[in-house]
Length: 180
Image (cartoon, rainbow, N blue to C red; front, side):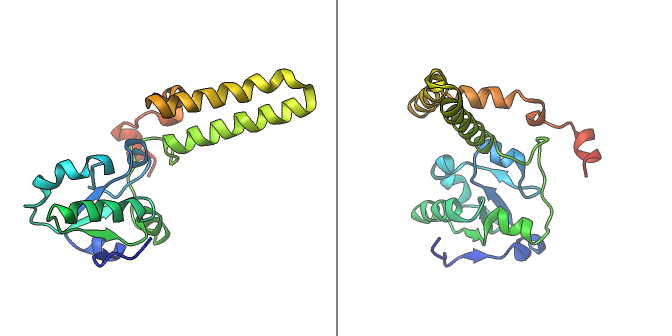
């Protein structure tokens, strides 16, 4: 990532009075974010620019490593909104041992779980073809077709299945408190 003129360090955000905007996906946000952050996915950032233009607090943009936050910074700047990019993103925030809140029982985003699951199925199918024969090609073809369908329609059946798993359920306030 190219450094943005308006980078802000994690400790500066922690010690200051910032409006932190998390530009990651909903599942990434739920798996872990800064306490008190506002979730505004990157694809919605420009439509929110008029509301953000008049904020009193300085704005810090957050993503996993800083790349999407830098894109959000560019988009907001085109609309006259001043914002800073949280240096190193949530990854740096975590490396510094700063507090993270989450609303799911897992720290893996749904997208990461889907990538892992799809990769594991393709790998399993490939090994099964080598060991037991060509009949197992259907498994890799099925996964490939599913990924193609998900990319074309933005409907991911594996993601919907993963979202129903017990580790992806939303924690109640009692569970969240007990898990700390």
